[in-house]
Image (cartoon, rainbow, N blue to C red; front, side):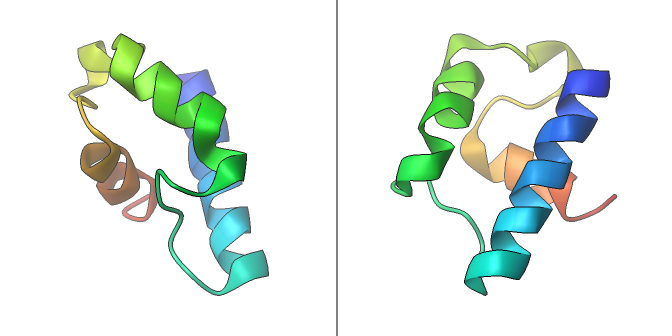
Length: 59
């Protein structure tokens, strides 16, 4: 869970710096996108990029 909270912080910082919600096509998000696809956070119901974005911006 701690790693997931760190990822949420990174996504929020990206939005703050770039004035847009991170997308899977953004180069900086490549590693995070791969982790989602590998199922790293399936235990937390994060099964897609959209789930991760919803989680990150709801906390």
